[in-house]
Amino acid sequence: MSDGSLVCTERTPRVVAARKLLRRTGRERAGRFLAEGAQAVGAALASATAPADGGVGRSRARVFEVFATELAAERNIGPLRVAAAAGIPVSMITERAAAALSETVTPQGLLAVCARIDVPLAEALAGAPRLVVVLVGAADPGNAGTVIRVADAAGADAVVLAGDSVDPHNGKCVRGSVGSVFHLPVAVERDVAEVLAGCRRAGVRLLAATADGEWDVFDPTASAALAQPCGWLFGSEAHGLAAEVAQAADARVRVPIYGRAESLNLATAATVCVYATARAQRAATI
Image 1 (cartoon, rainbow, N blue to C red):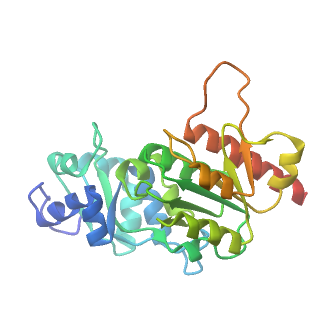
Image 2 (cartoon, rainbow, N blue to C red):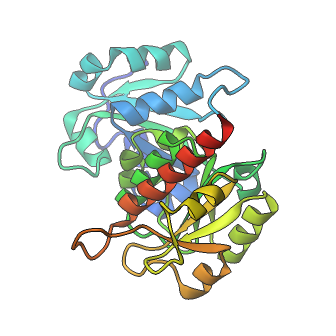
């Protein structure tokens, strides 16, 4: 499966260059990032080798190179064959090189060097979207990745990381998405006001998830609104949405707490809201 070269070590120039992608500055300079693990690499390769018409609801990914340890190659013959058939270089690496490229305690030994997957805001919101998920100031990459995965599973049209949010190419975010970063458009836009304006231009109603929202997400009144094109606004894990952002939305919606828990974390609240919306929209089309 290799490209015919010797096994790469942590000192091999290609590995050294790839290691720089573990930092945000390195990713931004190179325009590339690392996807680690069978699911993420498999999703990247599936997108990269998809038919010209896309068939996946977004632009195809680009994979520059795949790295694999001997053990990972034995366990992932299928993805490596896909890469080789597409002319994507496959390089064997040592276990130490895999550890140098990994941010996990137990490196998976399979990585892909990919082109950045984020798209401009206008592209993400093109085509009359019905369900958009906006994370405003989300700081935890694991949570952001989980929300991207939830949005993908619920059939959302796009995810937008607004304000001072985590980089979607962060390794923990990519792993948390379990490959979903390659399935739907993800935009990064620091100007929150522009994100809100862009959503409105796209024809989606903005709903802010807040603990004291005037609507209960399960109320019949909310269900009627959720059946229409919606853009959900979720705030940071620690502080939620800024008051001015919540007030700029068309409505503020709460997830009811029936027990004694103080609150729900970002990913859990987003799951409830996004799936309630997906259910309402699908029921409206029956």
